[in-house]
Image (cartoon, rainbow, N blue to C red; front, top):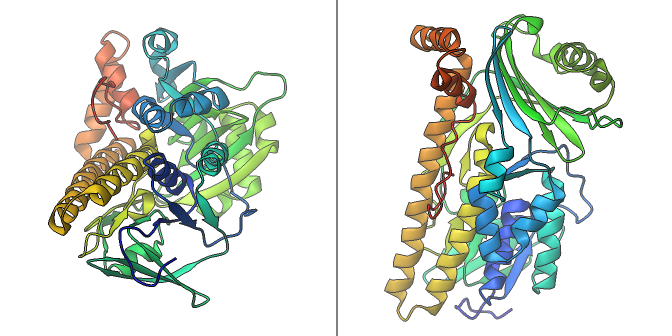
Amino acid sequence: MGNQPSDTEPCVVVGAGPVGLIAALALARRGLKVVVLEAEPQDRVRPGSRAIALMFPTLRRLNEIRPGLGQQIIDAGVLPTGYEAYYGGRRVFNQQLAPLRKALPHLASSLPQRETEKIVFAECLAHGVEFRWDAPVQDLDTSRDGVTITLTDGEQLTASYVIGADGARSVTRKAIGVTMEGVTDQTPFIIVDVDEHPDGTTPMDGYFHYHDPALDGRNVMHMPFASGMRIDLQCLPDDDVDYLSSPDGVREWVSKVVDPWYGDHIQWISTYRFHQVVADSYTDIHRRVLLAGEAAHLFSPWGGRGLNSGVFDATDAATAIAQATDAATPTRRREIIERAADDSRRWGIHNRDISSKALRQMRGNDRTTQVKRAIAARLAPVVWPAGAWLANGPLQVPVPRPGARAYY
């Protein structure tokens, strides 16, 4: 790499998670030289299924970036056969997805995040993306001409543009002086991955239960993914979260939700208090860095808004960088990056607000929400929209609109 930053320098992506990989592939598909810096080794262990659901607009966007990429992810994943919602032990909603799948063949795909990463990583290698593993970034210094990146071992690299996709503790975000705005939700959630049952009986419907009587009125969700199933428990304010998230505690409550076999076949347990935050800017003062994914926003996972919105952050950032690289003047370059950052941040605020609405409806801490939920549950057997409103509470997913940017 040269000594002076310029637009002939490579683009650098910080972070080799799914958002960083997609950003790198999108840049490479635009004909740009790309280097990915990842703090961890290539053989790092990727815990749990993590972000499992890639939705219709996201799969379509991936096919636009690399024809057939969305289809690869569909082929590697599963589509839930339907979605059921319950309230206090009584079913209030049931929707089979087969008719939708005929109309929208790329409706969704559910698979472990590590499998998504493998697919996109292979495409990156095929498109000449360079990877630097064990290369943690210590600092970035931006100027009107480019970016100087300092690694923790003292090595310095220069780049024309940087996409920061280095997650919730983003060094990139901190280095450019950007902070997060929002709140941390105080309700603990326990997220558990269990094995797929070898006899093929793993439930293939998505499922959400308000006030499950088998769990002393806690809310619970389960959702299939390729090779397993995720089960989420919403804790109550006075719960012993340490016990409920222990192997014995998980075995106890999981066995009340699904077949007790799953309580003895646990892959991963994690406890979260979800952040509902968005970066106060998605770019630096010189418009040489763009943030994407969890470097730019953190949401609760309901509706798959984290990774799905991260894909749009990454691909929109790559498009903006390619356009800026071709722009004739520095002023035009700044305008392109600034517009992309502002547009993505507006979507980040939108998704933060929507996922916060989902949490409010799930928790039902205020009297108004409690009354609305109870009325909807009573009406659901005869008024379909009432059940649909309850079922969509944790997801807040609108009907996909062909041609729209996305609902993420």
